[in-house]
Length: 383
Image 1: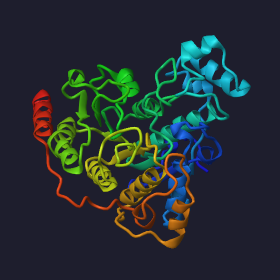
Image 2: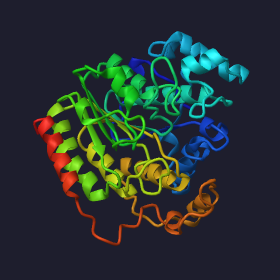
Image 3: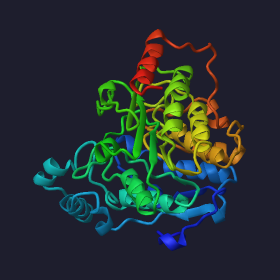
């Protein structure tokens, strides 16, 4: 079990990625019909284990961040209200309205403080593990909507803000944050707006909640918002990565890159209308890993248990320089078959037998409006 470590104890094995998780993601749930009632982190972890890729000496149990630490970014009154709601399993009308707790999106449940506090701990630990060079994968992180003084979009806290701040405290000043989630990272953008040493890049579906991240919010070498058109396909996504994201990162020359690897941009996710294959996001992470010697990858959104588990398990193979284009062994197939989802009783056979998505049967084209959008963003950022 790893604990949050002091600067003098930072692990420097740069070539060996670390996997960070916790049993709390298996033992707690948002409950009911909430989109996050499905198995996600635990399902991905079990799939990694079934692939014999969970190496004992590279696995760390995520610590739980304490209230005093959380108050260095979040408002003390909000942290007190969140902890009180977990302890009593009740919410006052004042706290509901002021802090957006006990709502449909941010319900009261056992672990509502401990679970996101563990996500913060996982990303803090990831920052410490890579500060001198290396790769760390905090699967339970990626709470990019969390705001200073209230819950927002299923996110009670914002672990990504803490990861950035911890890297800074360890001497890593120039940081790029790349968000691959289908929803815009409004919480991270709000926290670092105007910060010239942070380049925030977000690919997200246009006109999708939280309805931020429009073109007007682009700032050269600070904020690159790419609002993807509905049904964005692999070729279109790659156009933005090759023409906008990678050139902007090369010019910015970050000391570290933090990647939010949300799974909701993948086909068949119920909370977006994007059309990406999981291997397109694997390739994006592979390329990003090649651009910097300090990499943190987190989870994020994703609301289809089969597509989430396969994407996130594949990320771990990519980080270990292993091909994710594999047929799944029987044990892995049984694990995927055991998953359940209220929206769909049975997945397609491909989602059980192979890790990678089956390529589209028809050639994908880049729509004229997509090409025009990519050109506009390149112009905005003088690329």
